Length: 272
Image 1 (cartoon, rainbow, N blue to C red):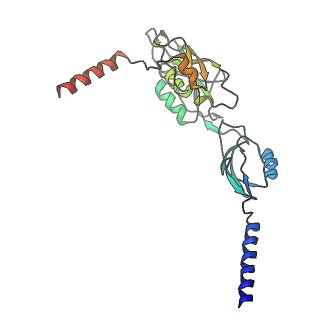
Image 2: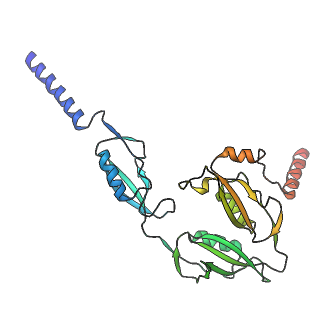
Image 3: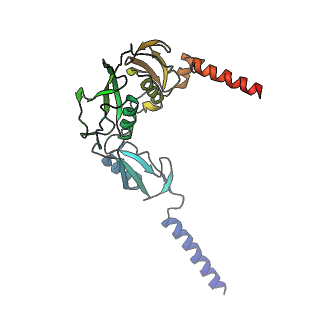
């Protein structure tokens, strides 16, 4: 019986050691960051790390080069066992095409919505003499009229010729400092103005996503009355300290109508 117990113990110990060797116990590999790499680069890097990869999907995005890795599972920095499969989502090698909508004779507001719905971006707003204010007169891609139904690259910038109306066609420059760049563009477009020159400080690199940068300076200054269609120059930074140094108040412009609403609300509250 003693011999049987010893043999059973040795078999159990051998099994545990074998399982540790088979599962590479305590031998893990840190998953590298594959985002942005093309497939050939992935193969070289994966082979060195003794890992495998599988492409499970593709998307179209401007964030990485065509054919580059857009997303990976597990994420970079995760510790896994040898020969673990890394699942990849890559950026499509060919540019996705969308259909150009018919924007002529629709309002500027509606045209903006239609562009977003069809995977396109608003380019310049070009105001021309017309009695119909804010009505789209023409749609333009690369300095030429683009016909409805034409296939164009997704996220192409479409410029619009818009009627100025019988008025002088003026607007006020919005307050942009402290806003994300993407939000500043919305403010500029909502004010019937255009994006001008972009100035990037040394905190912004080629890999920086501009949508997540901040406006720390603008020209013309906010609340200045100007012609519709005028370009607004923007200074961008990826460092919030630069924004606060440029303007420690970072207040939002409150218009007279809003102040009146606040006063009326306070008066009603006091009466109650």
